[in-house]
Length: 260
Image (cartoon, rainbow, N blue to C red; front, side):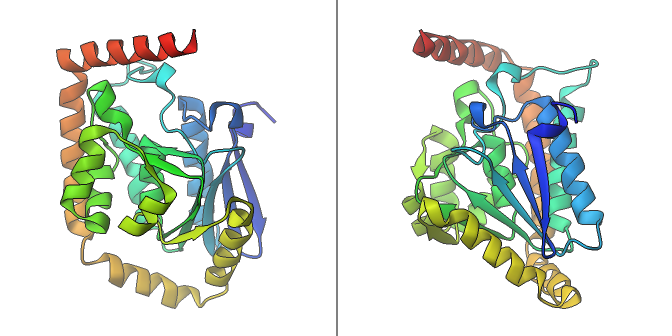
């Protein structure tokens, strides 16, 4: 098995596909290889008739710290910013549209794109040690795979603006109080509680689950998709601007100074 394939693990348990980020030494930071593998595993699980529920989690201390900063703004094979962001939006929409329930177990760092992965789930169960943030503003960017669109209906425009404007972190208790996460548990209980919930959903009648999910999501599905495409255009504009180049350079310099 290649090193790339080891960065995302998939385990099948009683109709549940547990999909785990496996780069714990970097708090499961999402580099290109890991992101590509994650998309592949998620699509396979959605298509697999034996899978009745998906459970996203992370190995080590964190769910995921989001985009690997060392690859921020980097593109391979001359891919455009538009194509890059849209690819990541497409898998987010596939998760949102999945006919099967999706559960996320969050802990440690849940930042940026990883926060958006969590928001795309049907339910979020969190460890009390989790921290949530959208740090994109610190690099002159915005959330671009649904962050502005999925968070705002949960917590309202003011709190959503606070998180997106400041890049500040909120702890798990605050996230629960605000409605970002649905269930809060002790760190040692997280995996068991998340799997128990996932098994319960996997055992439910699948057609009824699919129809209920579609009906509930129907109220905001169209607006979400329109908003995500607006995020796409906005992010491409920011990537091309001088503000992004200057802000990113300053942020990288600050990070380098902290490591000395």
